[in-house]
Image (cartoon, one colour):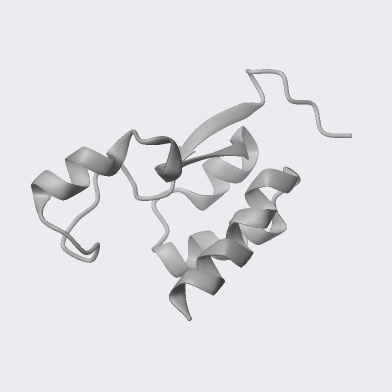
Length: 83
């Protein structure tokens, strides 16, 4: 069982807070969606730290391997949306 104590879990922005030109949308659109619940997931602090500022496709690998089931399930939703 995963220790979901708030010191061990981060609220992860899927589209990063500093999303650049490699992310679609205007600066206004990015700001609009940044803190929406659909752009957030849970990630263990250690997973988040190891991931750093990795590109989105690399992030999906971290999400898929996450110990938090909600975050694992996110990857299948992303793949379904992208296909």
